Image (cartoon, rainbow, N blue to C red; front, side):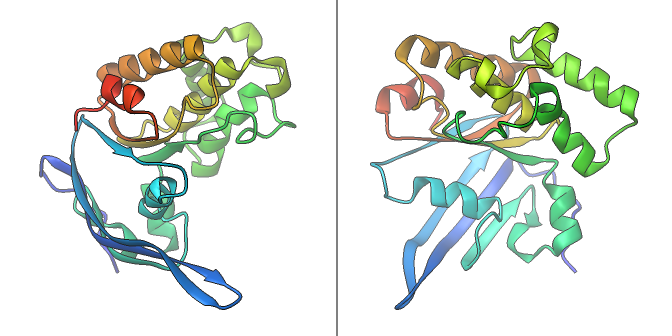
Length: 225
């Protein structure tokens, strides 16, 4: 059984020879081949490339959100690819993702409040009163108003929806967040606001980011490497 004890290493993520195959009618096709990198705690690593080159696949594979993954992924010394189901569920509290499109990543039938509370319910974190308080604190942290909690996604702007997505990713207080093109679906003015928010949250919460983008200007503004 894989061990969940962390190490004292400065490296929070160590990826070696990562490969991913997609199943097709004619058989498996390799879409990601021999990717290796490391990521220091509290820093931001940018992954840059054109659409379809495998950036998002890399992030999803690291989080065990894809099948047919080979290689080694160590998060804080933990063998992610070797974890069994319950161990992986517990580790997900420390590894989260912000998806690209806030229009499609949020459930249109759930209020903002329930969307952000969802991970707490799944992981059974705290009692109902404690969950309510954490959701209110997270709303404030990402720049949303408590009066907006009962609203549905279609009642928010694109930038506000992405703030909800960020809040949902951070509600479990993770150490590591994959930011998968988090501003590409937003206009330029809103992009700057969300990037500034991500920077402030990183400083305040000590987050480590894997930041995926095709935009060199965006990566230059946020990434350490």
